Image (tube, rainbow, N blue to C red; front, side, top):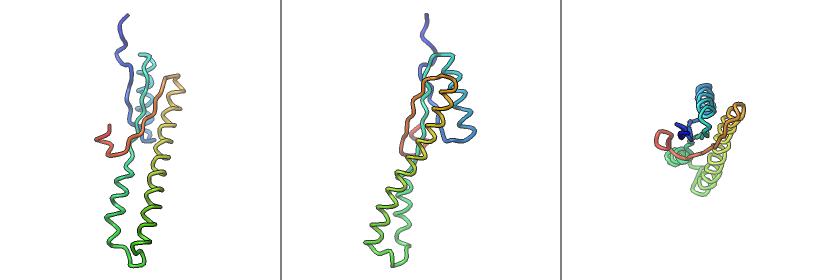
Length: 118
C-alpha cells in the first residue's frame, strides 16, 4: 500500500465564508487521504502596539508620561488578549467544521504579518 498523498493540510482561517469554504475543502481532501487539517490564524498584536506608540506624540498634554505608561499597559494587554481570544474563536470554528466531517484537526496561532507567517 502506498503512502497517502497528503498527511497534513494547512488552511489559513479568518472566520469568513471563504475561510469556511477552504476548511471544508481541506477537510474533504483530508477525509479521502486520512490526513489532518491544520488550521492557522495569524494576528498582529505587535503591529497594533507599534501604531499606538506612533500615535503617542500627538496626544493632548493630559496624557503625560505617567498616564501614557498606564494607557500603554492597558492597551497592550487588551490588544494582545483580545486578538488572541478572537483568533482562538476562528480556530474553534474551523475545528467544528472538521468535526462535522470527522476529520482530525490541529489549530495553530501565529503573531506577525499573515503573508510572512503562513
